Length: 232
Image (cartoon, rainbow, N blue to C red; front, side, top):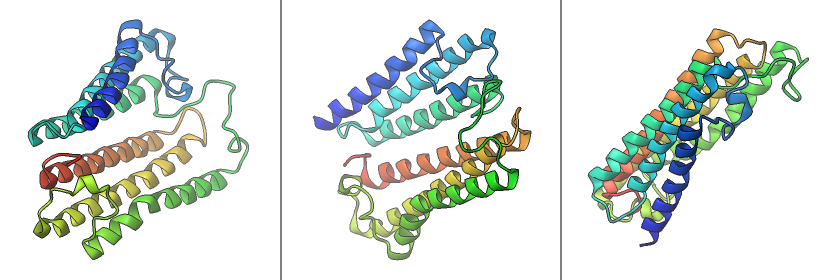
């Protein structure tokens, strides 16, 4: 019962945010850097596309979290979640010219005025640090076959013989998440160098988002496959 309340509660909140954007055409719920360079005429379109994606994400959470639903429903939820995230980021990049941009006559705190190599070095170092969030537990799970880094409800129903397989799958996906953090920070560093952001930085940012979405989908999908549901 608790998982139903949590899943539906989070799902409804996310979906309502999306519904508001879809109906109102107001993109102010986004961070300002997601629409800073979006033409005024396109902002309602951006809001509606992101709103539709958020509704998909909200529905996905309601399908993934409850433990009483069949495993195939959770799989649909994972697919919806990834589709919603990809759709949202794609809409931002298409209308805003980049995932993260600056309005004219504005600047990045602590970044503007710095030498390009300093900005890139700083972003790369931060990216490496963030990547350890995925690399360390991922490598540990692959090397040891230990899934204790996960919440226990993610593997409570997993057969003992399948624990090492789950650990390997989760480890690979965690490493993928770490790689995505590094890629995104390198792309952010490129986007912060000049305006408009160079095309390569947008490509790198999009690639990072794709790797993130694929890794997240893989991690959730592996749990559902071996555990029967996301939360046992």
